[in-house]
Length: 416
Image 1 (tube, rainbow, N blue to C red):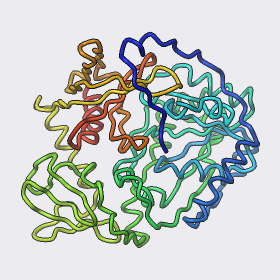
Image 2 (cartoon, one colour; image 1 turned 120 degrees about the vertical axis):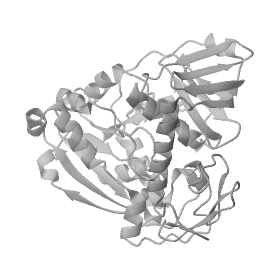
Image 3 (cartoon, rainbow, N blue to C red; image 1 turned 180 degrees about the horizontal axis):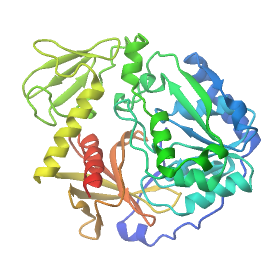
Image 4 (tube, rainbow, N blue to C red; image 1 turned 90 degrees about the vertical axis):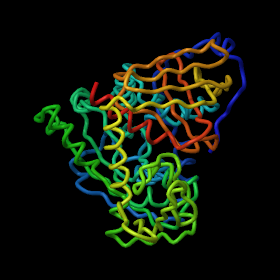
């Protein structure tokens, strides 16, 4: 999938009018049917199956539907499971670019990832209470990098108590393994399934504290898809399965060097020390020679997190990278405004560019995580920062810095 881009000067973009907020539309049944039919081919290809559990507890709806986020296939899965019910979708605002009318008729509700959006609660309530439609939300906000749960926002229990509707959980299996974000959109031959169950009734929500509700959600989203692949003996024998693995395993577990890892074919190699690891058909790593420090990929990623945290605590962490900059101020296009420089440390982000005209700072308490992505809309890897007025899409010109930056934002927020 691609996105509409347009080259303009920074001054021209800043002069553009900002779109007015609109209440969610009731989803079109016709467009919903078209979307479901369009996704049938992908679902047939992965042999998709699903089961429903305890759904009698949820009643007829409307519901708040929560779902783990692994790949674009997730949307096609929901369309299949929910048929013939209509529902709204909490959608990243850049998904509206170039197709706002269509997205609104589908019932989509735009919001900015990892940016405080007080209007979102009112929009969800409007869809549930006025439009009488269920609402689908991906509380993780971003795809998982390493196949485990990305951090959930705290105090989601407050939202559940305010909405007072049943909470339904959809969990997918195989979606990440088929199309992991680091692998350059190369699809693997993996069967995909899902479960749909009533997680909480309004009566249960009322009886539980916000902390208890948050813990319940944490438990429901506690997933490890590499472990799932190994335990279920899911074979992935594509010869490109390690392509791009350096995006998440950016630090050598043997020599500690960063930015010198290369994932290609079935091999992950450190160009600094020469150590090589083979990724087997069950998603585990094995060193060609010597010790395998982390056979389980999420363990390697967790070790990198510890390393980043140590850098933060010692005052040694920082990011300095030249970037290409795209701005989003409306739903018409991503406006490419030129080059700049992005800096990040314990004090937050500083972005400068456009011959000195652009200067943006974002503090460490702005959000608990960072909107970051690989091969974003087939343009490139991104780190996105910003606020309600403008989003800044930063495309690093070299190096695997995206995963480390996301980790650093999360750890700096915890310490802050």
